[in-house]
Length: 141
Image (tube, helix red, strand yellow):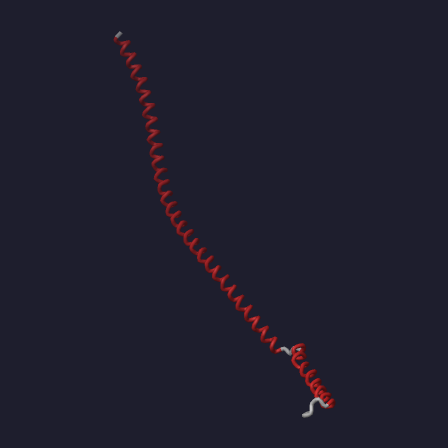
């Protein structure tokens, strides 16, 4: 019986050894996977650093673009104000030119108004004086 117990124990130990070998194989596989994961994690960290540098550069670039757009917008507003001022000045110059050209034009109606009084008033005065002299109302003429 002793031999039987030894045989049973030996079988039990062999079974346990197989289980241990299986567990060791799994641990070796896990160790290899852990190494791979470590390498991938280190690569990912390096990529993240590079990406952060690129994001910082992009942020700086976007800030510069924003500043430039703001300056461009402000200069556009100033340009519009300048154009409005130039438009007002041109309108004033056009009005002055129109007034000056109106002065240079000979207006028939203005001339008639100006001289018609003399053309009518002078002959009427002469005729009136003659009539008064003829009627004897005015002796000095």
